[in-house]
Length: 318
Image (tube, rainbow, N blue to C red; front, top):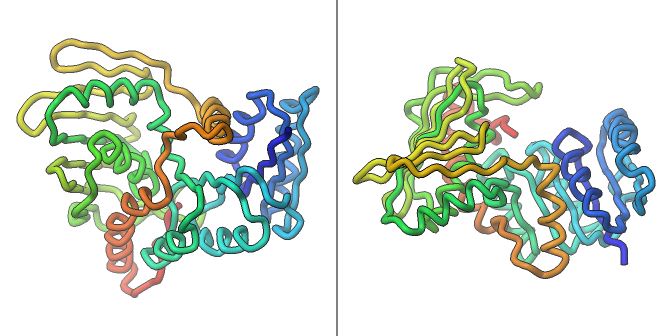
């Protein structure tokens, strides 16, 4: 029996999700929604070669009311702006069985609360794909043999601190089962700068987070253009370095771990298959991700309001 998939957001991330789904050779009925008709046409033209000679039906729609009804899976790959309103409409109009939602979940604490409330009882997960990476799974096994707390430092240039920090917050939560207890944004540089995607902004500088088990996360992002680097340590001793570009991790004792880093176009299909078959999907639930987002979004919102000099209802990140 074919599976019905609704993709909201015809951008690059959405395209990679669908690429991965059609690679599973399952019979699929795919409906792609985006308010931008030019993005929809471009999506259709790009994907047409990939679905040639496959048992796949594809439709594009610029209005939600013409989207596929009762999809087995809805993938939300739109920007964070308007996320709550979109999810609210989807629950009313199409009633998905399962959800996969991209970060960041929302641009304000109020919207985050609304999303958690409206998705209560839904089978919904947030796409933090490091949980699916063979490299990070091996690292987790190694960490399970050690004593906590941990210290993780993420550094590099232009990696999108505001929009991507939640991935690393989730990483520590996954490694330790601890929750965020505080977020310190006092070391952010003065000012916010327009991000690569027009209409959104990013800060530079440093953010520190503390966790309920004593673990610590330090996030540093500057304008140097240097590749991102992950350093993991224990508060009472040496740790190891993770190079996600090469898929290698090296401990202070000389142990090396190497695994190819999988692209999103290789992850969504196997993940969805597991969900359809009732297997543990490995990604965090909406409720779990709410706890990951809450204090961080609140702290960024205060910092943004201080920068603009007014009390705005949202911080423009995605």
